[in-house]
Image 1 (cartoon, rainbow, N blue to C red):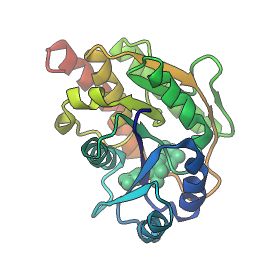
Image 2: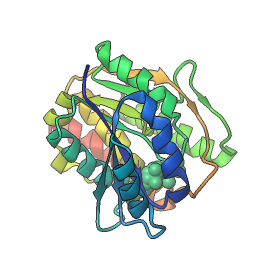
Image 3: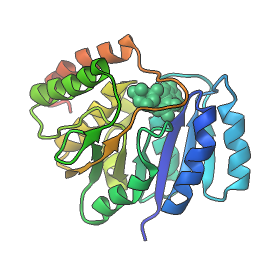
Image 4: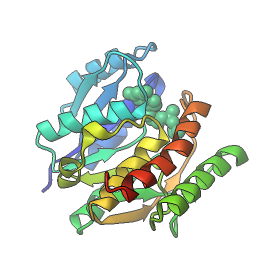
Length: 237
Ligand SMILES: Nc1nc2c(ncn2[C@@H]2O[C@H](COP(=O)(O)OP(=O)(O)O)[C@@H](O)[C@H]2O)c(=O)[nH]1
Ligand SMILES: [Mg+2]
């Protein structure tokens, strides 16, 4: 069986972390919590839970820099720890922990990246308001159109990635922090010729804690997309 390590970025997820780790226990993956010194004590809670649960490790970072740098640190650690598959997932129950084995199975079946998708046939968004739906669907459409790729959910953060993908992408060159990070990772993988499979998921809005989405995260995604396209056209990507 492939060794799978799930990177779980946390910033102020105190209420969600413990139930999330218990929900992940039956999936058989190892979990690497990547905490950016959350002021609410998520990092200390993660240490305590790692002591109680055999499948959990914690990576502490000094400060909040956005999802991108947190994931990159998590990826490097997971690769060093010998992961065959590296997973991404939010720690707010927007992504259903029970879907983890479905993503793993898609990579077992030959995909290089299995992408939990809200916008493919069978995908669904449960209870987001109109504005967030528009921003998310519009963002994915915008990126897909400009980059000319067939992937329907480019901003999602629920993925299972084969080790070779992360080894062949220049991780040091990725500077994106928010949704742009998800777009850039998927786009770089496509440019290298890796196979991406979209696995339909039901996405639910969080009920505990707060979203860290901000206007600057949306703005970054807007200007990064044409830049990525330009880099690709000039052979730098
Ligand atoms: N380590 C770390 N985790 C983050 C950061 N920003 C967001 N997260 C985590 O990434 C996941 C997704 O973030 P969230 O705020 O739910 O974004 P949304 O789903 O777009 O609303 C959650 O588990 C957050 O706790 C960050 O700067 N550092
Ligand atoms: Mg969320």
